[in-house]
Image (cartoon, rainbow, N blue to C red; front, side, top):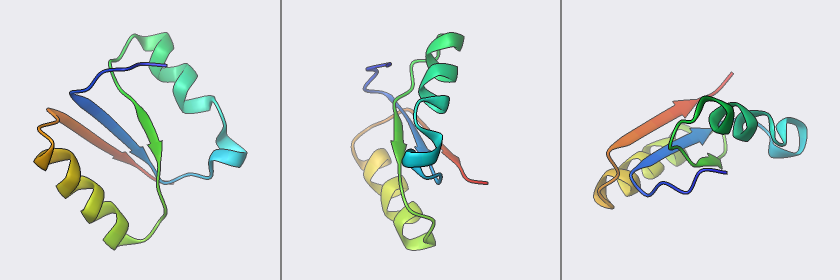
Length: 65
């Protein structure tokens, strides 16, 4: 699992169902991202975006399907 402090990936998927899929892809590609599973509510996404940028993270990626 990547441990970069400057990049975040927020995933709107169920970690019980998708366990390991995103982490393996991130690590396999060598991206310095840390996957964090969050809910599907817009307010949760906005709060995570604001927290990430306030903490000085350079890259924030959101993924939901």
